[in-house]
Image (cartoon, rainbow, N blue to C red; front, side):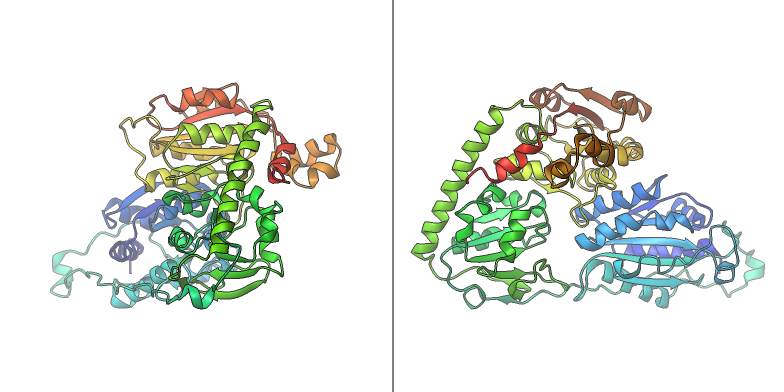
Length: 555
């Protein structure tokens, strides 16, 4: 079976199964897919991406918007470049396909170029893995691919995540001229039309609130990344205040009580007796401490296994939860009122604390960005997402993303590009002021993924990439490491500041550039209409002492 025909059959079948995007990384062994794409075997969005690591995180961004993307790579180290994105997708429960071209079996283990054991490279981090040899388009092939797509989407009863399809191509890797009509005679049948099976995700069974949660005097709902869209419904019906991380998804519908870390770290937070947890709350130590308390009843709402229970303190795990039917008890209503009053008090104190400072920290930058934009936000998983969580009074109505699956700085620019493309923020037209994707990240995060600026330009993404430049790894200064070393040792081993000319970097990739001297000037830049990507450099101070001060603002 010619390799290009196999590639065409795979792409056509995946197209019928709901694949939305193909990110193709150039290579010789993967070339059959290039020929198949050029011939129109896939009808969705297909584009070439130079760097496999960037392609992986662009796929993560696309998956975060509800797309089903595939990354096509050649054999050897190209496959290994996808490992960080595969880990992020696995832990964040995001569906994506890794289609890896491979050498045939006889070329493995004998020293052949670009040959390694890659078919099970990702181990437990993929939901499924299949090895395919060159073959005719058939119901058997479609069956294999149907199972792969279903596993990626978590259907019918699994957890969404990445899947690897490893395809061993033999030469020739280029199209084969069709046989002449005389030679083929009447043997050539009609071309195969894939008829894949639709595999639907099973709906979790909802438990009654009264049976699972029961009465509480001081109940809270904590929403982490991937939280249930019913969190606000639970809050309104039960009177449990809703505390939500920025990337939980809960802010989009409103009703969130802000300053979760300050509230939970206060004496009031120590009165909580019941917590309903949805999603993966991974951002703050005060929340982790709350969920580990032996005197707190923890109810996990998670439709997937393994469920998220970091402290091992869960009392009950349910796949889904109905809202409360009984009237809100007076004690719970009083508690909710006290929590709202405390949040208001925390906001006023945080305002005063920051007003008395320099106005040049990442916390100030977070507040400026939140006030000056209205489109989707992409927050670096290090200091920026914590700054928004600690200091921003509201993200109501906002769609917020952050790679909290592994909470790494890898691929943040590429992820933002994927989100921009998947959410429709791309193309030639100018968008209204504020209606852009805004990505906020530290300087090391930006440097780590600088090559993905080329992705932003190629996609014509309406994207502001804001670099909060605190001269290195400022996150460590807010942790115990900032107190355990000398300033010189900190800068040497944790800060690792990079000497970068960001204007020259932007010029190298041919994207717009702006520099502002402090966060207060951001509004003027962000409100200026702009098409395409832009790099915005904002020098900031670390202000490490402010992070702990805000957490303890009510004590």
